[in-house]
Length: 149
Image 1 (cartoon, rainbow, N blue to C red):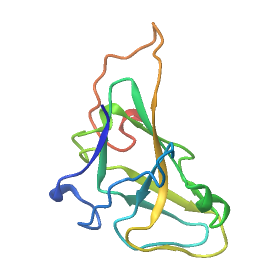
Image 2: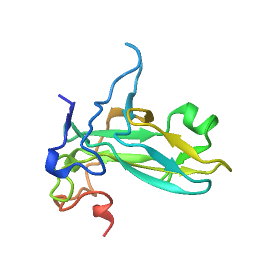
Image 3: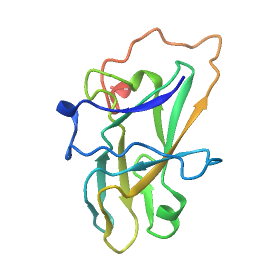
Image 4: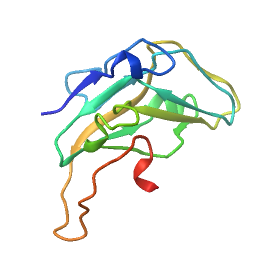
């Protein structure tokens, strides 16, 4: 089972608004992710946008986030980390409850503006395989970028 839910009101960042991810069509492989606030990304700049949504998934699944194709081709946007990998144990982590954050980098020469509720990225659930060796028994202790510390 996999599903989305809003994070608690006390942990919402920048806005109390929540726009739940949706597939634009019945055969779309990815879910559109929305901004809960107005976003201004200057030319050459970045902005970390917290969606106020978390994703529950099975231990052998990942939620992979990418910029929408129109964001990359028409607006000159990329993810600042190039690809967003959201592990199953990110859900309900002690730092941010699993709030999905999307850091957009504007590589164009113009300001990019999103209104509340605009689509900013897409994410897809994907199953993966584990190697029979080289696995960790460590538990996640934090949120965004915490496993690299």
